[in-house]
Length: 255
Length: 269
Ligand SMILES: Nc1ncnc2c1ncn2[C@@H]1O[C@H](COP(=O)(O)OP(=O)(O)O)[C@@H](O)[C@H]1O
Ligand SMILES: [Mg+2]
Image (tube, rainbow over all chains, first blue to last red; front, side):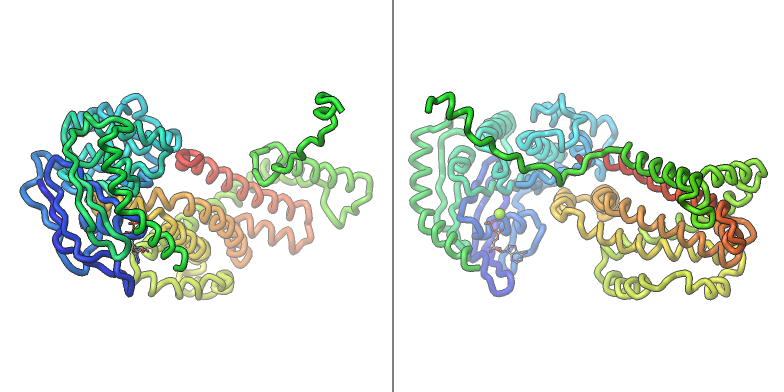
């Protein structure tokens, strides 16, 4: 299933946040959305998943969601959003409980996603016992459990330290290589974008407009740490964003 | 000066990070109790405290034992405990339900929050005559008084707790398509539980106060009646025996909630 953002514009009161955004997220690809902070990336993602309605424009699903998909548009949040009173297993089962699955099916799904995210040994741990990276893997496991058509990821690695971020990027690439998923991936980190994105959309500062869309053809599993090809793209992106980011930074200061 | 000497004379950095970190030291609480009682015992025995000022703790204990042996203790305790349980359970459960509704629905909030604010400061005991007219002179009015008294603080604590539930968790629930009822049951209520329980601590203490007040105004049996009778005769030993029972109620209640908290809130650090 593809997802299409079609001419989206939005204002919160007098602040215009997004202006005429049109973007395609084709099935089986990761589309990264980069832009200075405050340019409306999170807002756009909320529109994409139907958590909020834009003033203008529409979000379209093209084609049917895959067989056995329980929640076509599934979020992964920057702050993990795990229920602290539920174990790892409980957090995953939360999103299955409303679907009246036979018990064995639910158990099988939980075991499968925990294995895929390398959490099988931590099924009974509470979130407070886990490191940030593990928490985010739980959130990824929870998202995989509903077999989403599109994953909407809002800076999923931004709350993590640099090493954990590298590890989790490797994990995401491994997951995608095993079974390609579709994702709209918001980040302000260009290294993440060039590592994970098949397509990178660059937003301008507020009001966010699409400044450019860059395609990277290199397969995900061939992209290495400090890859020169990727560095070149990253430099190009940074050149495009630098002034915007500076202006956005100064703008935030006088709010 | 040699390197070693300089190292030896250097001023050590002063430690200034102490305090402000409560640690559980259970025995101190008991020690304070024991010390106070021992002081009273010693004072009354030596005559430093006159018998009219304070009864001797051992005499109070003696009275208590007599009360127990005569079987009167349970005659007083039975009705009091029943009133407390029925009244507090009614008040707390209605309070939690209304508090959750206020927390979840803006119309209910707009309608009820001013009302709750208006009845919160009324001394509920002043309304006892009204409750007697409405619910009869017997148990009904006592249940109602205790229930009403527990209700208001429970409501306020509950909707505050619901307001404090992490919105991003609710968003998460919605984004996974959980039903409204699932979100309330699995996200809002457990998230509000710490606040609800600490509210219950206050509500239940108020319930004990109101229990005694209600029993003082009209009951044959009950701790309140017992205390009132002892008080009107200036029988300080019995008065204190009754007061000690109330304190024990309070301690038991608080320990009970502590136990529930440890079980239900294990997920908090
Ligand atoms: N619910 C809201 N109400 C009012 N303003 C909002 C709301 N959400 C976001 N904004 C504003 O919209 C702008 C874009 O926010 P956001 O989408 O979070 O940016 P980003 O994720 O790119 O950093 C910011 O200036 C923010 O203050
Ligand atoms: Mg954001």
